Image 1 (cartoon, rainbow, N blue to C red):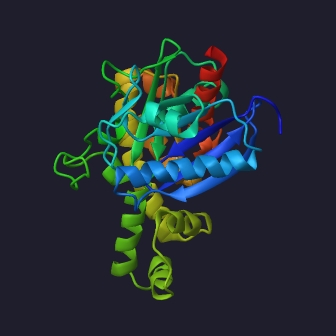
Image 2 (image 1 turned 135 degrees about the vertical axis):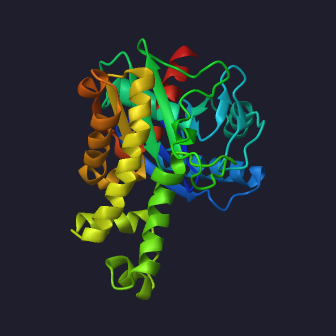
Length: 319
């Protein structure tokens, strides 16, 4: 094991992923736990300790620091998880609690901000001064770079693209609002659209999968779309359309050089991004729409984990 390793942890609404990462950003070991069923904050913190300990044991027990990307508004000065939509984290002194329990320095940031750090420093947004990121998973996270720096906002809540309303009377979101982007574009939304098709069109690929006892998920939709299933491709393209509406708003607001799209849904690749680019070209203002690049993350759905590891390296270097 190379010296100077850290652990990066990406906590999502469905799973938590920990990785032992070296200074070349090579991931040596990974550990995964589910997070969706953890409705109690103490149990969630216990699971995070377990997943870090598993990764640390695989690394031989010695790491310089641990970084966490969590789906929460984070008070960066105090290291407090202020609030989150998908998990039971509210006013939790996350940084201090985890540092005490793990016995190593701990860094914490919003999960999408962590992914933005990874992609801006070493990934698809390298060299840009203004960039945006959307992570499409259980929900949608967002990151912003302006003047070459990650923007967190006055109180840590900048870049919440997932709760940008794009359908005023749209479906009810877990945040309590209606028509939020994540209700129409996230991995959860993709799975929900696939389930609807499975019921309404029993002879479709989704319908046959349902009869065969398979779970109808966003991952299945992506799999069938890549296999050429025309209805699955329509479902993914519909998600891409709404993604384009959201990105068009981001382009008009920020005028970024690049918009990076990550999270599990990006596994659909160009089947998702091509329809999104087409909508942006129609809806965003010129010349921004002609200049912006809309690209997948370099690190795939590991951007959050890699970014959390980079934050841990920054902390270790400053100590």
